[in-house]
Length: 437
Ligand code: XUL
Ligand code: CO
Image (cartoon, rainbow, N blue to C red; front, side, top):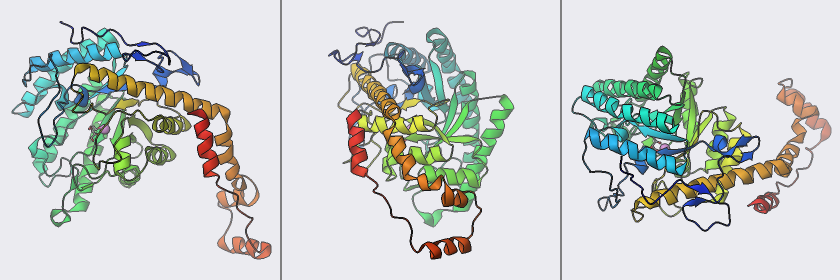
């Protein structure tokens, strides 16, 4: 095959003093931090949908991206060629994983059978490219939102036939993920939400959403797929209200429908901020529930109110993200998945490299800074001491459930008033973080 990136060779680590835009300054894959290589901590993944299918189009104009390898057709052979290009890119970048939707990799057919056949033809190439390069699939997923049939949702559609089509697509997508040895499978709500409540039977829609997930859990067991299932929270886009609006809403839904043992959360930065939260908040909510699985790494724009999916370059963001991930035991099945796209103005192939190198370096720095903060121990000690009253005497008694309102009243009547509070020291802590940035 003719090289798609003939002027670019394998991206190397050159260290922080390098001025080479096509080199890593901080991501040294083999470097050991907290007992593991950066490669194994970060588990970087490239997303197929933005990096190989994104054109740079926006509501005001068509795509601008120059992709010389793509003939622009919807043919299977163009898709197969694109798959080879994707692997050349990932190999040169040194990304150990990728992620895709069924419809990113292969063209839709007129019938479901044609869709399946197209997908199989491209999966063959993905499989052989995985074998050739050692690059693995982080997770697969089904696109249940682009085709007009999903106008009213997929699992939550008012049309039972549409539910059946979505179920068939999910079945096939899990099968190919399994065949490719995927470490996981993601469910993102897509159009599972509403534009007006005037035409919505919410209870029925939520029941059906849970039903599709239960069917997927059953099928996963049936075929012996051991990958982790994830659900990815996102609010208000594309619909006015998305059922999976944030981590708390997803956890409540999973618990209500007995799905929590089967799914973890895939937390995306720009989705967190659209929901009015920080990434750190969403990671804490997921982590505290034992459900932090993977992250979609990107960032939004403070001045734009939609999902701009930019590459993450803020060291504060990556530091806080890695602090939360390490606190909850690190990424095991999950990864740092760049669900991010280059700007419409960045239309040359080399921009794809700059974008990923920048994201990987930002996360490597965040990882090293987070590890240094943890090693220093002052932050952790501060938080531990702040709650010290819960680790002895009355605190332990309350925690163990061996008290009553009556007893607590008697205790306080005798004492007269609670012990004085101590300062939260936010500014001190913010300064402490800055010592490491
Ligand atoms: C949409 C989004 C999706 C999911 C996979 O905002 O993030 O690309 O990650 O369906
Ligand atoms: Co995403």
